[in-house]
Image 1 (cartoon, each protein chain N blue to C red):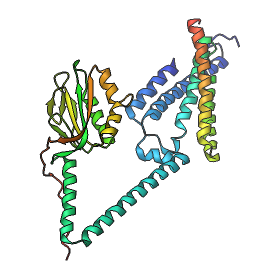
Image 2 (image 1 turned 180 degrees about the horizontal axis):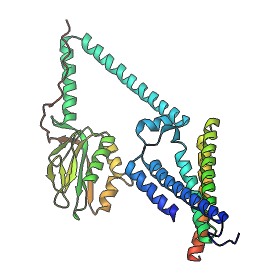
Image 3 (image 1 turned 180 degrees about the vertical axis):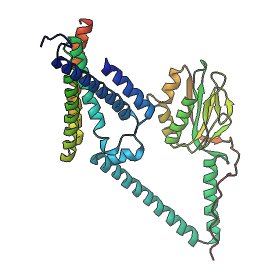
Length: 110
Length: 245
């Protein structure tokens, strides 16, 4: 509940403040957002399964974001930044789809 | 584990930690929302360059190199033209200037143009042909090498504009209402222009989907007689070169 309100507040703040992303963050922000989305969908699934735990959410959110950003950072240093970004996004997108499928089965029983 | 809430210090501590993590979860979610908005906002142009990957930058650089080569070639051409103009005698200089003025007059639409070309008629019985279609036709014709053209009695030049007219099925060409059938008189290579018009998915197809008709006749001799008044530029004045001794 608090998380949902937080999401709304964040979006509203973003729209109102209109932030410009600092340069050093620009390659990582999109990946971090996708990683965070993965955590959020995982949390939604856990919530529907009745096993949602704030602590788990916080930890998975942070670790997801940090690991994704780290991978991209490392990839950039190794000269394979583009490929690794693609890889990370593909894996996260697959997880998101899997979570959405679980949520869908739960909600619509189909 | 199964202590009732508030039964001891352990429970209240756990309760406190729960509230804390809940708040943190909310904060992270807010961060995510903020991040989504920030990431989806378009970045300013220079930031795009600063964060572009190496391969993209190389590609951009190649592009610039090619453009520079093209411009350099153009510069050489102009320089040699200048040398020719300044070295030859008065008579030839005047002739060259006149040739140039004639070419520019055709381009600017201040002189009638004649030559091989096509006569193209776009009929619009269902009044559904839009200004965009005519503009598309003009651009395709230019790409196909049209030198001079007119729509109805409007000469089409570089700053001609098109907008859908107030009444359906009419188009304003540079502020003058033109009614269908739209008659294009175009000087240029007839074969190329006809092909360009009939290309699949091109102008002819668009007109047909809009319920219009289109006929193209190639002519060996055709005159674009519509003129466009010469305007004195409001802000720019040509630079007169100092007379050479």
